[in-house]
Length: 160
Image 1 (cartoon, one colour):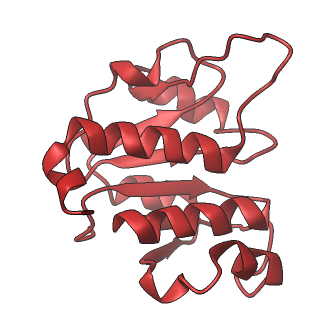
Image 2: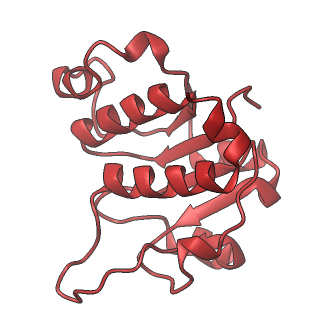
Image 3: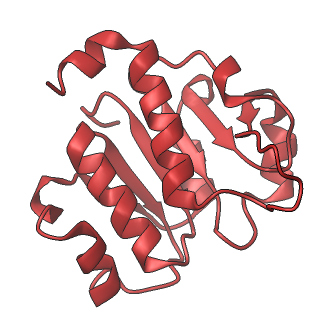
């Protein structure tokens, strides 16, 4: 468990600049970043560091060896999973302090068996243009995180 008001979880992230941007977002909002191995890059990667610039000391990061280990350590009622493979809009989610916002790999998303297991806790960010496969991972994380903060105004107020 973390003392952060919210948590962003990246399952096997592959693109260093996305993770760097999300780390910066987490630092700015006092959100804990959970990284599930295997990672598609080294955390020493210069692109990862560049995206976070000089904010890394303000980011709380927790590493997990695999997704199963992470899931076993959590209260499933605090899990919110995001995928392009479901229809339920992210604005239908009712976020609370301590929740985990879970995003899959950039190229494959979350595993199908996890989506099936937690289908009632899966949400999507709708897109109007059917020719666009998905939003950028960092953009998606930012949209959902700020919706969770908006719903929990007391958390949002702590950012001022």
